[in-house]
Image (cartoon, rainbow, N blue to C red):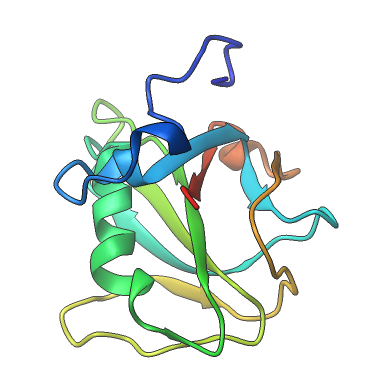
Length: 145
């Protein structure tokens, strides 16, 4: 379900992953940042994107810059916060991976921030809305296993 309570238009695990359709490789979990079974946040690489960027653009960015570049852990999904083209607010894309994993940054990618101290490992099982109001519009997407 989406944060509005409506069914997600993103296919769940039954449809399979089509790499040419980035969001088909993910399932929308809920509003906020992705968490594991212990309600812990994952480590992440953060990218600032154009105000008009979409969740699909974030999925592509994570696939290009993070998914195949984690050593000692697994890529788990992403959270996307929409931008505001009228207020020139950039969109936000956080690509999540296991604590203990290291990111081998591809030379073609430039991140704005990286956080390696959240502690989450394992599959995404939920989403938590952070306390910061600017993060309330985020949605969590988990890799389809």
